[in-house]
Length: 130
Image (cartoon, rainbow, N blue to C red; front, side, top):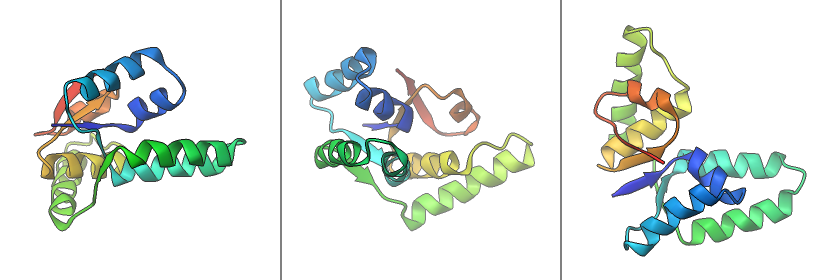
């Protein structure tokens, strides 16, 4: 299964053709669309800060009506703690929101679909570039 990262969903919402093609391919193949609660937060934060707040909030509500949101469970928190510890000990720290995304994706046994290269620093995280 796949989990869509923030950068893919932002591109989709902005009308990027390559993002629409990737997401459409998942839909056509019957793969359910999933993302994390962290990505959901990041997108809603952006919508609230935007000059077209109400329009963007409506678009997000439609997006999340058809998308399963993977939550930050105790297991995901444990994975995120492990990830943080390993990255910190190697001096390879990444954004803490991305640590949480990695924990959720690993705990959910998903593959993260992203263009963010820094996720390669997370051991055990399956990645698919779009």
